[in-house]
Length: 396
Image: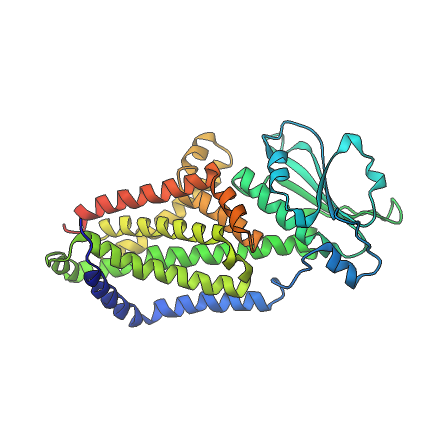
């Protein structure tokens, strides 16, 4: 089917005019931006030392060793290729060194490096959930020196596990005055006091905002406005003109996907501007927006009034939440959850926000993984299904 640009342009102008008259929708987009600005100015997002050497300049007691700035101490085990992936993803600028725990005495760590200790998996919750203890150790008295290493470590781990890694995290300084004074902090302590918390908080807040923006602009708003046109008979009249269905879909994609990506760009520019230079970030946003647009188009195909889309969207969100909750306990629901594009989109959104200015080459390496391939496959497949179903339902 031939697409005529001038027809699409006319439809885009019509939809933009309707959108500009929709005060609540514009206010909600503005609210997302305001929340991002408030988070960025609240101290959750702040300038962190980019290298341990820069931190050492502010703290003369830390004298970094040349080239080596962080160690990964691991226990050889069946890790499914996780350690090998970490070695592959280790950037030279961080000076990462991998050391087998059996070949090194942890009591003789150099006092000027950061250390990430990886323990063998341990079983928790009556043996039903397997977690791996990760102990972050920092030189001197400032745990913020862990920031570059933990940021990279979490991003690479997310890439391997395809979801939030099953870690039980602790943190402690390398040198401690006495054994009695030694305090191993729990995950809650980390989330309250150290920079590891900032990595997680910024990523989770940013991911939540971006997901809400994409769902609202590319899915919810599309469903609402299309159902309004259908209820008033404007959609039937439009599709009876020489405008073909694919031009109608293309115009909707320009307006709603453009609104989603534009608002997301402003939010990320406020919270984590370095992510805007990452090709992985843009690829993730495009395919996740594509998935939500396809979802909105599919819901709009069955919504004949303005009440139905709200109920269908709410039912979808509730069903998705329950599905992911059940997938933690039952294998069948894990399979079903793996067929949703959100499962992969959320992971790569977190990765791209954590990785900041990821280079083009590194972005391509991440995008060649099967996990990113699933995001692309599911998003495109859902769009094709929604287009096919909509071409028959919207004319009804």
